[in-house]
Length: 237
Image 1: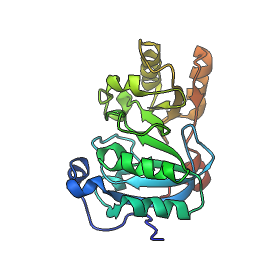
Image 2 (image 1 turned 30 degrees about the vertical axis):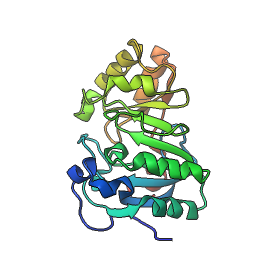
Image 3 (image 1 turned 45 degrees about the horizontal axis):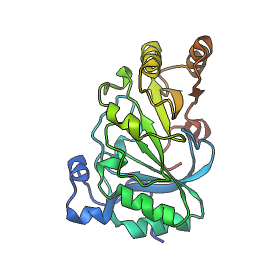
Image 4 (image 1 turned 30 degrees about the horizontal axis):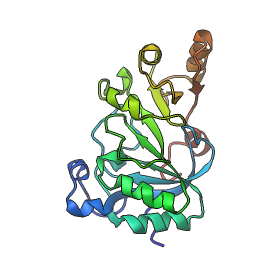
């Protein structure tokens, strides 16, 4: 098994990841891969293999994975799936960067599903979801104003979100919380999906976000980034 950990391989631009050559349909730029305790989202707390792909079309102010913007190793999809299986962990999170910036991501998901993995994809809400195979759990970020990327969300994908999928809002303060609340009160706001609200690390106290949710009786989950509580602000955990 060839492990990909931390930043590996030659540099690769985010543009190359978004607009890959024909070979990229059978390969992926992989930034890092490692076993972890899932830190956020619907699978929080479970042992999970994290596959972080290279490239992202957004630049959120609180991003904690900027190391995945450009650098990665080009890997055959079958080899990536085999390496994941060798960890001996059923759950897999495909993330980035932005995993749907690479055309080979749906094929990786299919390969992982065929091996019996429970597969989640964390995506930033600006890409069409229809190419993802049935059985993939979609964790979709809706970028609040505090991210610096408000307006990047493609409302058309709400119809592609199913029960069991999750909308996630990272809040930097009260204004982001109120924005998220208004979004959830709007028509067609993905009510079939679960909802997670999280404080941006070091920018909003979790107890404040929890208090606002309780005051408003919002039917959402409040989470903090468990992996940072366990290990601190480190990579590869």
